Image 1: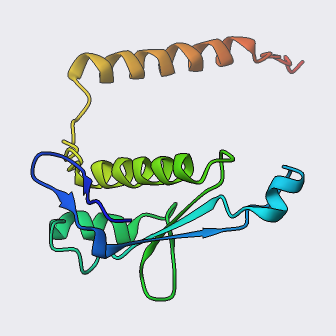
Image 2: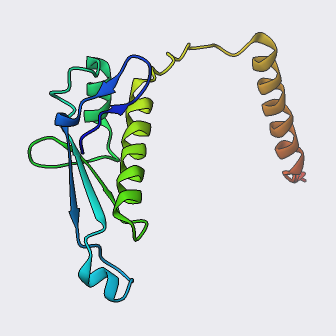
Image 3: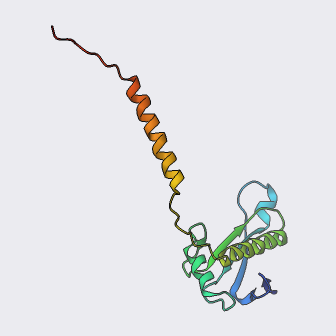
Length: 145
């Protein structure tokens, strides 16, 4: 791959941090699968990429759904179509989407306490439930004679 991948206005991934290999695809496809290498394996060395900020590198390394090779490169495999070029385009789009998601900073959760009326409502519903259960119990008085 010769051209860089543009992520957004400030981040552009250089071609030297991305390697693309074409391999034989698995699955159905008849004779075409046996003679062409259309499956694309994209490897991205994100830890040594200077364009990515450190928080995005940390987010990418902690992501459980991503695959990494023994050298720490992020791996993306695509074999959706019978065209090698289309699969390269899909792999680059997937890489762009993954990096854009890693750039988003999650909002910090603010702890909130239940309001006074919410607490009162919860306690009153518990009291009603308790009274309902108490009403259902049979009270038998055995008079001693």
